[in-house]
Image 1 (cartoon, rainbow, N blue to C red):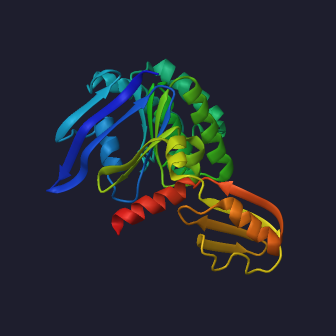
Image 2 (cartoon, rainbow, N blue to C red):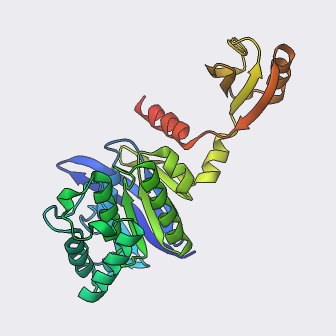
Length: 301
């Protein structure tokens, strides 16, 4: 797939503090790319450079195969973490104004705005002021504003903030539809469970640098299958203090184990079956959250 956005050795400082340090990455069409990291890692600074709000101190950014330019940003859509809506204007007025700023005619902006409010279940609120809406409804309007001009490159900074489970699921379905249409989506979130379900590739940044980067499945495969879940009937001390077990979490008759390097799961199964009745023994890949905690914690240490 063609590369939509490419950053090469990008660096950004604020008052002598390095926010982004020699960061390189690329995102392709038809991909959901997770830009992840702890607070203060440099994610928002990177996003702002990708969409032209700020310029890098050094390095290059290419969008749609050319150096980043104001004209090419008409093909980009941005949902900021902090809401950027005009609170005393109605939903219609906000979408009309933001659609025209993105290059739409007034008629087209109104047509697209109405369509998105119907899609987001907000048609009854079309003529209501933003300040009258709940946080979740405001987030849906912000989401619609980011997509009203049908951008090819979409940046979502904490898009699930304020949404209930139904709203979050609706948003996920739309993101997957946009991916299927060949759009490029950058997802920045602290919700590792959402990122794990949606992202094809990730870049985990800490201290302005990339510490894990690549295809998510390949990253998880590199970590190996080092976690085991066991459902059993027997003593609640099963596998406690076992030399092959690095960490043990027990929840009644459900057990979660993290194995030490080189441990043999089959040998562990035989030993467990000798002292308990095993109804489930499953070797698991580490979750994205576990990888995040491991790598960020290791860097902080």
